[in-house]
Length: 248
Ligand SMILES: C[S@@+](CC[C@H](N)C(=O)[O-])C[C@H]1O[C@@H](n2cnc3c(N)ncnc32)[C@H](O)[C@@H]1O
Image (cartoon, rainbow, N blue to C red; front, side, top):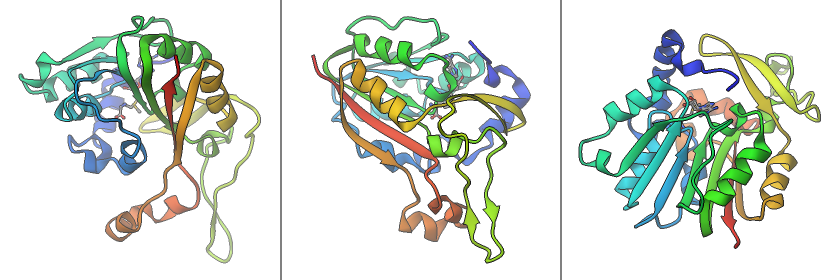
């Protein structure tokens, strides 16, 4: 494990104040970029990698999933996830503290693996994708979202530059130079891994996944009308979502 940000109580409490951490999925601006790829979850055994406060896991149970194993490194996250889970749902969701850098997922256990905004924290993408592949049944779904490589590329703190014409530019620099990026986020320095789009795509293909869709989130017309704070999100994609199927 490189860092366990969310077990710093001050970091964790500030993170919980972000709109995406309300218990309601409407707080997740990019929800549509994952949900468009959701399979019919009825009866599925699902794994939620880097589950955070467990929002997706609870959603999957509402959609009829039969069992979820939800892993996260952070004790604070897992405790919060358990608190937010009703007694009925907790019969179907098994929250576990594990470090995904070293932990091996069980073999051929899941019909779907979901991971939202976690893989860019992990150092070894090749290992985790191989691990996810072997944990899925044939035709199993792997759906993940990461911070978009255009968003993570800059070695300096990324930010918009305003031209004299008031037009905003998002500079893409250091894109080809994959590796750690230190950025200020929530309350201090956070280390994320910058990878190129081709690295995400080719790593999935190399391990035998078929890619059945990609999404680069941008706000919808409706979101732009309702949330003025999203207007600059049209300049570049902040999130990359890739949907894959295990072939055999
Ligand atoms: C940005 S949060 C996303 C949480 C949740 N998936 C969501 O969409 O709200 C990233 C999560 O990844 C977890 N994480 C980071 N590194 C990890 C590791 N090595 N093993 C397991 N979980 C990890 C963090 O603890 C955190 O809960």
